[in-house]
Amino acid sequence: MTQAGKKKKRAVNRSIMLAKKIIIKDGGTPQGIGSPSVYHAVIVIFLEFFAWGLLTAPTLVVLHETFPKHTFLMNGLIQGVKGLLSFLSAPLIGALSDVWGRKSFLLLTVFFTCAPIPLMKISPWWYFAVISVSGVFAVTFSVVFAYVADITQEHERSMAYGLVSATFAASLVTSPAIGAYLGRAYGDSLVVVLATAIALLDICFILVAVPESLPEKMRPASWGAPISWEQADPFASLKKVGQDSIVLLICITVFLSYLPEAGQYSSFFLYLRQIMGFSSESVAAFIAVLGILSIVAQTVVLSLLMRSIGNKNTILLGLGFQILQLAWYGFGSEPW
Image (cartoon, rainbow, N blue to C red; front, side, top):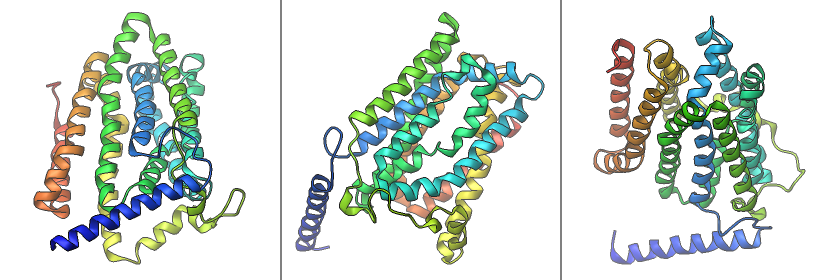
């Protein structure tokens, strides 16, 4: 690209960002602190999953005590019902956030995702029941990614999404260890109270500090206007997948990658605790190591690989290491 072409591109980018700022200022009531940014989104994600990370060790204990004979089965059912409800509700919540804005649905999803936390010490049965049902609204990541898409240009999004994913990992680096330490020293009740307080802090942060990323002028309709129910149908999107061969191949790749990953993640820490005999501190340390490696992978390694070997080869390399990881977990029989 010539020097003149580069200058023209920079000028166009500045114009786009200026237009976004003007629209955000003129498009309604920009409640919050400052202009919408990726940092607002990552704080929301960090606080939500930090609160849940604190409960890692207490949840494993309560799950085993509540369902001593069917611990893995009940864990699978709870996670399965939650995932199914999230799959069914995610398109509807996405369509409604396109009309009513992101902030309202960030508040809604965080509130209902964190609603089960105080129930852990009140009633374990209600705790696990509400976790299952909370899947209807437990789609904070979907709304956060939409928030990020509103405020970034196309060439910035992969790094912005990587930062969000890295923040999720960062929230799990220390919180399970902190939860395990506090639970051993002061009891699980304190851990639940602390997790509840952090969840409330997240809700207050959204109410007070997070500005709306989708201004009124950019919305297809106003409050109360009907939405297209085709947008809200989770199966309609699946029907459209087959219309583009490249999109179909990408979707199949993602599905086959996430299927074993989700199954492993939903039961692995329980497996370490109950079958491999890991202590709560060992599980927390294990999660911390995974979190640190994930942060490095999602930020530094990902950008280097995409620039050096391209997107497709990066995906192939990632899938190769995933195969190695899953095989090692499956055949490993010693704690080391």
